[in-house]
Image: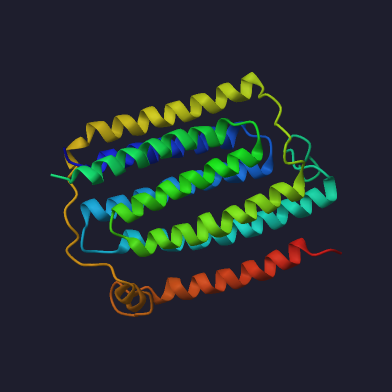
Length: 103
Length: 171
């Protein structure tokens, strides 16, 4: 039995779809952010797996994942700063009740 | 032909990813969701180690599991009572989410299985990815060098530090 490309893409696909489901259904802003991390992580896995199986000997996919991880870390820090600021102003991070910035 | 240990390791990782990512989005308590996310991130690092990208796996554990998760836990503690459960979902929203996820999975799964011909077995890495080669590629301006994105990332991190301070400080 061989480990093929497909066997790595299936868990990553399920991970991405879980992220989509959580992104749509969650109400808490931090839970939405967690779902977003899930999606980003699935994409990182795809880059690395495609790089390793289809173009062994090159490192483009690995570097792309490396930069994606760095950007995800920066983005998370910034979003959490925004969430804490929103909580300080509205005492709530439920997206149904944060309608001040609509329109 | 893979070694048996590698295959067993693959099944453990794949099972962990599937189970914990489903639990991450379905659990009611937000702190539990963060904990399950931690397991998913560790399993992802396991995939990177299995692909022989040791540096990427180490970065994944250090930055994601070490840094981002701590940020999440702090934010959860700062913005609500940790034991608090989320309210049950409205069925309309749940239907939309489920159908989006299942439809996406079906379309992508169909594409994957019909193109199964491209699936090649894991061949041994012809070049070894050492810290040495990663470092010289990150700072080279030649072909396949990554100096420009490296510098762009450093500007981005600086902007994020300043932005985080400006957004989160007390007025």
